[in-house]
Length: 444
Ligand SMILES: Cc1cc2nc3c(=O)[nH]c(=O)nc-3n(C[C@H](O)[C@H](O)[C@H](O)COP(=O)(O)OP(=O)(O)OC[C@H]3O[C@@H](n4cnc5c(N)ncnc54)[C@H](O)[C@@H]3O)c2cc1C
Image (cartoon, rainbow, N blue to C red; front, side, top):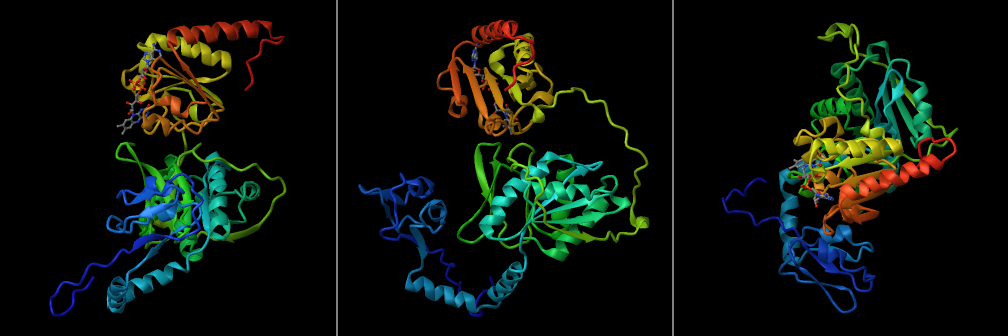
């Protein structure tokens, strides 16, 4: 902000205060009060908010959470006067000009990640959340895909909710390379100006999203666990764990476009596939000359994975934590998982202790999973573990501490000793299976 020529300091730009709009409160239980970081809201006997203006600092958190829009922002006449002075200054005009260009960016785009013509399921999960965002903004949902001979994926994208599909199909995009995919993505985004771009937080997506955001000079929120639209200003609210997972931060990209976010596989849910749903396909050419590339892929040789476990795709996971006490005790979790047709997961404590390989770790620094059944054995339920599994369809927690936080997300909680309960479950299952006609694995 430029200073007035007389050198006097300009008064601080007012943030406004909030007030209650009489009659609109539905006595929801004090959501606004809980959201207020300044303790500026009390609730009266009718369940309505009483706002203490002296404490309010205009942060607007209460406005955002109010389900009935019963709270609004206002400025006092003195504040209005200061604001009007602000609007007269050159730099505000510049900001206004910048903001007006933001209006040109419209639509929600999802990057469809594919290898060899097979799309990564995270792309369809992102179309699921993208559909909600696009509806809230009343704009189009588009998928964009790059590759060689990948036209068939457009149909899939329509089936999972895209209204439009942008395709760059070129032999130079046969294998993923940062330079080629970066060029393709940036040229599409610059031309069509989507306001929101979502990518999967996979190895490829992490590499590409960062490069694209840097090239476009925009923000990128990685590993989001929640994406919503702010009713007030149509901004994308990007929620993710911060400070080692101890708080959930909601991040806004107010002045740059597109608003970019990446999301790990299995965090969002895909919509049911709609056979025969169609939309518009827009094809663009790839214009990067091959000579400009510094590297060339000659051959792709798959590496031998240290562990064949595919936690992210598993329908049943039996996970163990520090409560398992020793590496050999994971054998009983393996036995239970085998009987159920599942795989074994682990908390970070168990992995750090060397009881299980890192490929089995569930959580913020491990895998995000969303199985049909998640059994947590001797796991306390630290937030960093919960962010990786709390969206599982059904969670059973076994813990000897009845106050363990894992019980807050569990659908069924068993307070007891894991060394008694798991063997009992195994015995029961064996008995049931021996009675089952075909002795096949139990289907969930
Ligand atoms: C930046 C960061 C990232 C992290 N990332 C992850 C991550 O990805 N995944 C992750 O899991 N953690 C992660 N953590 C670690 C996390 O904070 C916890 O320390 C960890 O999840 C605890 O693991 P735990 O529940 O196995 O162990 P503990 O917290 O020690 O819990 C053991 C539990 O076992 C129970 N128990 C003990 N004996 C028995 C018994 N016989 N029967 C039944 N119950 C029993 C206890 O009551 C206790 O609740 C991260 C931490 C940080 C700071």
